Length: 329
Ligand code: NDP
Image (cartoon, rainbow, N blue to C red; front, side):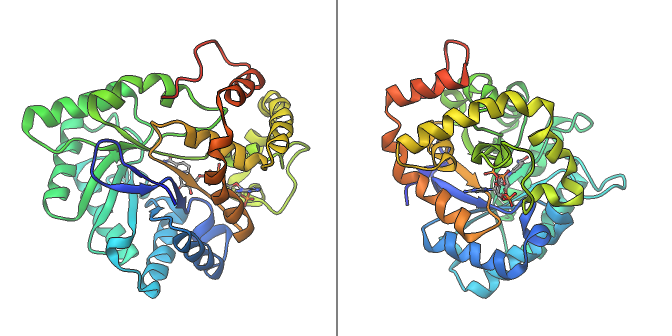
């Protein structure tokens, strides 16, 4: 396994990590969840991603039980949660001091740990002053309940503001962002955040490297069944992956799959290796509902060397991007 520093922080995360959205406590049984966690850990994955909203807290409960039963030393894994969508009542959501503190306590309980390594503000909250959130995250860190805090899908300007508040009041600034990043969704990581890497040493834990399955090719002829899009609460995703908007992307998936084949890898491996080529990516969070998927995806690390400049250029041509992409470096 390759390990990368989370931005300029001293923390090392495995280049690929494992997340539980849709799957844990929902799509898959607890036994399969346990098999996947062990498979990941045994391969050297040290970062496991979770959130209060995943399966309404059940995802954290399942992961907490697996961690407890595993007996893995606490210094061998990095665990996250995210706060924002806790419930539908006032004060059960957002980034107010009350919700952030209560959500943190609830996550610690469900995950059965004394502290979270990473704690993310899952979305920006326009109804809470950034000062309130930065002060709260700083105090959770000083209490030892959180080690590093970060954001997810925040605009660059809001991250800059959080740093300004931290500097003004001598508080601990955010360390990392969790943005979507894949061949079809790159603007934020490659352009919007480009000044933040040098300026703040921002780390990134990127999500949906396979665009939720589109970059596996299995949605080329509509939804195949046996996937996350079967779930009643995921019909919005089914529409995104198979509806009109997906057609143009599927037209690119086919040549990408051919290129992957020529290179001796699968399309998911090409898509994940491509994310890993971006040095601003600290870790690529993998999702999997089956051990075969996880095994295939983890192998992507071995293929990054095959993505030489001419191959990256061929990918750009298939993706038909504006000149200037990619901005890897
Ligand atoms: P991906 O885009 O990689 O999608 C993973 C899903 O694709 C799997 O669960 C599986 O779904 C399918 N799949 C995976 N590998 C293969 C394969 N080799 N062949 C065929 N199908 C495959 O990632 P996710 O969207 O799951 O996101 C990963 C993690 O990122 C999440 O678990 C979560 O931790 C984090 N995340 C964070 C968000 C945020 O807002 N901060 C938002 C979303 C995710 P299926 O069962 O359908 O086959």
